[in-house]
Amino acid sequence: MATSTLLLVLLALGQVDPAQTQDGGATETKPLVVATKESPPFSFRDADGQWTGISVELWRHMADELGLKYEFREMPLDQMFEGLEKGNVDVAVAAISVTADRHKRVDFCHPYFTTGLGVAVDAEHSSGGWRVLRRIISTRLLTIVSIMIGIVLVCGILFWFFERQSNEQMFGGKRRKGIGMGMWWSTIVLLGHKGVFPVSVSGRILACGAMLASILLFSILTGVITSALTIGHMDVGISHPGDLRRIKTITVEPSTSADFLRGKRIPFRSYPTIAEAAQALAGVRSEALVYDEAQLRYLANSEYYGRIHVLSVSFHTQDYAIALKPGSPLRKPLNQSLLNYRASEGWNELVYRYLGEDVVD
Image 1: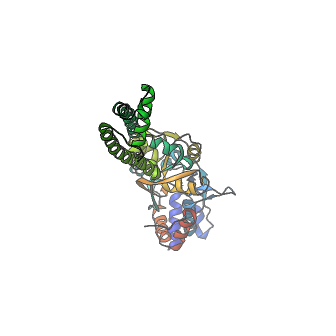
Image 2: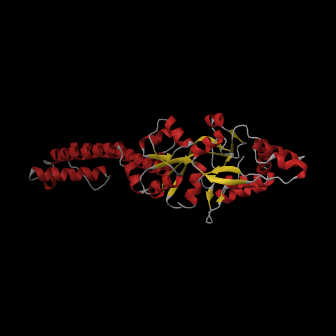
Image 3: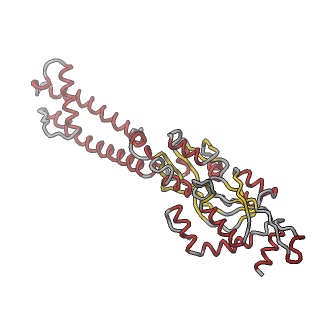
């Protein structure tokens, strides 16, 4: 029964010559055209030039189980869908997201992997260094520092004015010298030094006021710096897609990440491949790379280890699936094989081998 079903599928695909199936004659099949592209860890060439990856190994397993012959052809994503629509391509296997627009054009098998859009930054600048310094030097910080400098100047002049008669040893003589000493005193008072003892009543009142102001300002200053350092530590301050509008963002196009950024009206620069985009990020030609999170984490743990850092933020959940040409009779047998394999330990081992994490359903 299984053999008959497979034969009918192959006949429908045009892989078998009907004349050669008569009287038990040998059947000759032409291989399925399986389109793919570089999308590590789901599809990429190994050291020997052979296609491998999570999606590719999944396809190989299902094809072997169903006895399908096939050949891989590398092509860009847009050409994959054009080929599927025209019938020049039978199957597309890579990191292909299922979207409503794509589902109108081609058929899909059941999803086999769920991920989201992630954000990667240059590891050297993701925390500390120039990036954190930029966050510390904010408008709030400069305002507080300006107020403190203003207090030092005003208090310095007032100290000289109030103390010049009562404390001639410190504030007597030329005005410039006296005001300079007053500024020195006001700085010491703001820093909480206990060695300053104004003689005049007015000077003492001024010193008390300056001390109270210093406590308040230093509390605010500490809060501003702590906040900046915390934000710098917590994923460079990116917690929402809108945060990407203020930094140089790149992605790969065509892709669902490019569509997402465009839909959110976030300016971005695009690259044709994830390898080129990652290289641009590592070369500090941009500040953030938005792409499929699983692929970004794979790159951060392999080829770009120590060079790019993937943030914990993730948005726009999406499913990966194998794409088929419209009306493909392969859909049902492939779905059954897919469901069986995903329920096995082999699938967990496959995902763990490439991503270093267990499958979470």
